[in-house]
Image (tube, rainbow, N blue to C red; front, side):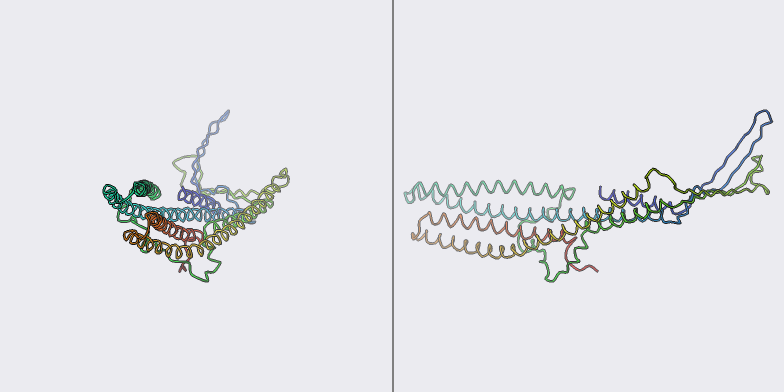
Length: 383
């Protein structure tokens, strides 16, 4: 739809621009006059100019300029739709990688807990463990099994969403299997980025072109107060016989200038100028709003960007500590130094820390995608 709108705006501009050039048409006519006198016939053929307006006061030129700016604005709207699609695809791709990672963690945790359950069942049969400890181990298994099923469903939904955005089936080799450093490799925002990078935003550029179009419409509305001069003329031949239409001595021409001077329009011209001024004020407000919204989106994304960098580092350290605590707790439990409750807490903490690390990394990368979109297509210098 965005591309079709660009084609329509381009055609509209060409139509408006054509008014700045005279229109030529070939005409042929046969006229028969009769009555109480013998009927006579008159044949004419010629090349004519149809009502070409001399643009002395810029009305046609301003209308053409307004149509051109409208075309530029629609083109920026198309680029905005493209940037949104790129951001949506990137976000869906990252979500698929994160859910694949969560599914892998859940499957590995389920396999580990199932091994622990088999060992607990064997020890319970030999009287080496209590029924409470066996039941607690089963809760870990079933919780991991539930997560595995949930993440498997979410992976399928992510894949469906990605295929919908792309518009077709995807090559399996292009899909992420997890959200690691190689997959989540969007560069960080460089320091000292100039504020004029916001001028790349297509919504701001579209609003600017709308403002320019509104200004051009004011010029056209003002020019409507002045006289308009239209020319109609033709050159060709005329003859009473069709066979002698193009013989020598049959040349003819006509030239009809028409001057229209507005005197009383019932307030139509002033109302048109007032509406053009109001449209300009609206376009100016929309332009200011687009700039303010752009600054806010970038500021929000930057604030979240700094916080997420700290969270990722902290969450990675937390996951490493939780994994080490689980390993040490398992060793102490096997040596009979800790209770199963302590091991149970360590396992749950490590599992939750691994999941939180994936979620935090997904948030960090999604924030960089949001920065890419809010900055109008990234922050790299364009040649």
